[in-house]
Image 1 (cartoon, rainbow, N blue to C red):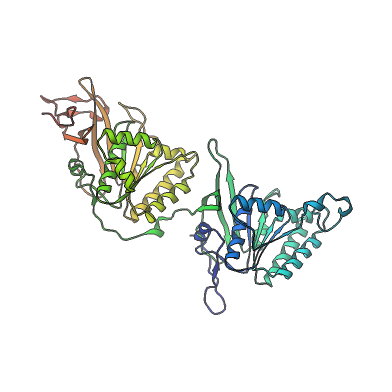
Image 2: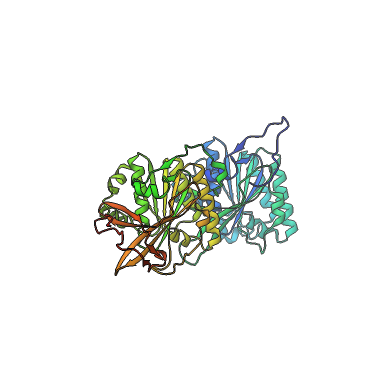
Length: 508
């Protein structure tokens, strides 16, 4: 949280906040903004300033307040089009347009007060003052300061007029949002000092996929807020803001117990099973059975009446359902009952903040007790820089742990047999690590499973073969006579290999 000092009124009580019209922004600000202050929303064209400003005014209309939108750049017709495409109505919002299109090209009115290119700044300011005094609104949006800057023609005159605006509104019970499209050569830090709060909106173009939008609170006097960048999208209905996840804010008491996998041998290998509030990393080559192992946990949770969510970055629902049928897992029944929710994720279209918000909604609104992320390789593609992936994943796993949720992460290694390479090292964040490997015996490809890490308790240190069949997952006895299994080409020192036959049974 940002360090700041809370302002109190003369009676020693904190003054009430008002909503910005955005649930996400209110969350970041810890309840909204102070009333009767002047705020600045700045960002390049297309970042969503007009949309979030209209949300602010629509919230005022819902509260029964008089609101005013002063526009020097967009016409009222353009504003109505924006509103209509969001499914909104501008009813209740007074639009004061200083650039009527019907007068801007009239040569006989070229020097009137309605043409910004010829308009004196002081006259424009007076028009604004007169309209505010006439309407006496509780909320005002001024769009935009770039037009005032153009009229001022000098930084000193521009600052004086902005100060005049601030002093005028200070004497009135009115909350003002100023919009600035950053058309000047550099950020106007003087404007920051004048404003009670500053919100920066950004739009980022990445090498592939949809553009990413994010906002940051640069300044907010007297209000503790959540610092850093917060992802947002522009949806029909306004800006959908996803506050940056801070795990420490979401601690909840839960019963510490095992979450059974439905397979006794697997639970024994794990020293009793995986505990709630922990996370497990399934590490191995493509196709070795990591997703199938994760599915068994989801089915077992559904059998207990618990809700699970399977976030798939790599595979489609049809592929996962086909695999479940092959293993004899009743996935379709659990999907139909709603106990398991399958969500396909496109990393090119979804920002990490949006994904974290999706996970949080699954836990808090849907009551999910098991979260499966398949796979981290796909999630990595959503993050241009792996360092930020580690930070995001650390916060997400901490949040899920404090909510008592079991999290299963799938990470595919590069290669099939022999030396294996991992695209990122996230094992130190994991409470448990299960290693799955292919190995070759007598011209056949086998699968091996071992628990290489478990923070929360003892576990079996052996390597076991496991098989995938129509009966699900089966584990064989410890492969004590083999050495070098994780290299992919082990050597055998025993008489008869204790391997699993084609039906999933261990042979002597």
